[in-house]
Length: 132
Image (tube, rainbow, N blue to C red):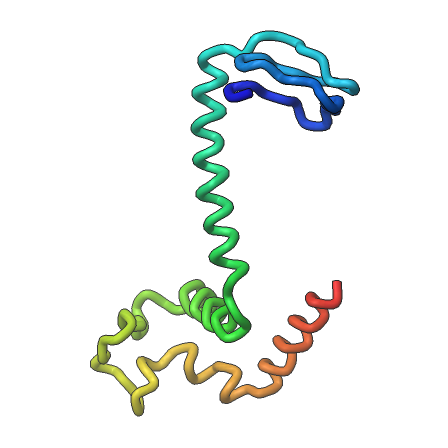
């Protein structure tokens, strides 16, 4: 029933009904105690947090290799670029320092396009990760 808790690893035998407001644990599962109102509120908030984390996880898992590569390059660029140096412009906006339509100088001059061996290393890592 709703508003009940079954502990992790508890084995609820077939035909057993866990009544509302009860906490069950063990093997086989038995009622341990009543669930407090505070625990019910905590359970509801934890469920919402878990749902949000699941959505973020699904979004990240849905990315293809191209998007993962872009994300990795953007992360590396953001962590290594000096704040005094050219900063990338938001998507869709042309930057003053635009070089041949490629954006401001920065990571673009040190990418897998200009260093193909880095691209090969990245692909090898990706293949090794898929085999595991």
